[in-house]
Amino acid sequence: MSIGAVPLSMSNSIPTTEIINGRTLVMGILNVTPDSFSDGGQWIDLDRAVEHVFEMIGDGADIIDIGAESTRPNFNPISVDEELNRLEPILRALNGRCPIPISVDTYKPSTAQAAVELGADMINAVHCDRSMLETAARLNVPLVVTHDRTSVDVIADVNNFFEQTVELADEIGLPRDNLIFDPGIGFGKTQEQNLTILRRLDEIKTDRPLMLGVSRKSLIEYALGLPIDQRDEVTGAWCVVGAMRGADIVRVHNVKMIAKMLRAVDVVNKKASR
Image: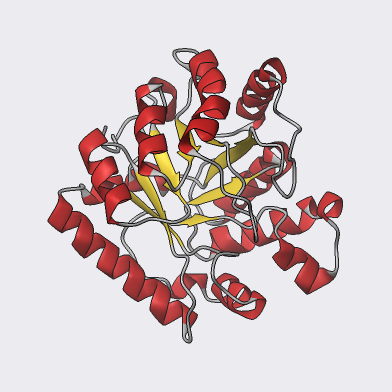
């Protein structure tokens, strides 16, 4: 599936840059994990998980991102079988029922392959290597590529990484239209480097859609000393900063609050009509 230039209400394909430039998209997070840092165990029950998906859609989500393995710092890796055991019920329950694209949050190509076969529309890879690019090319689905390296000059390294990824995608045969980039706040970086990305997001040079993930992350504790259950307002503020500085998609837990904030930003940015 390429990123089709069609209205969101008419297709599960991911919007083109032209449509993304119409407004900032909201990716709602669903973690079907027992150990995610923010909401581990909250959505393990299938009925509650499905209900939450449709609640997020009603609140303004444009994409649902489903994760079955926590990638928090010092996370405990799980097997592909365990990951799929967690993913399969929710993907089957949503297949044919979800009116917006479903993303699967995984760094394992075999999990991504199975998830797409079960109905996922795109892959969100927090750690992305050649094999994941090849998987996305073979499946012809959009792929979020996250920068997860340590850096000396973080902005320069993010830009170089994205440029190298485009070159590798061209070599593999993954259409550029299927690439979305995430600068990877919280992955392989110091907290000061994470803040640098927020401050200088507009210096990240790519013609592909840019996704920002700051929701409830430890960066908020570092900057403001707030515990997890008090981080949604700061998440929203930083999503606003991101949207004003070039983010096309934000990945968040609290869709209802942040979708409203971003609609207001889009009006100011003249990205969307009132």
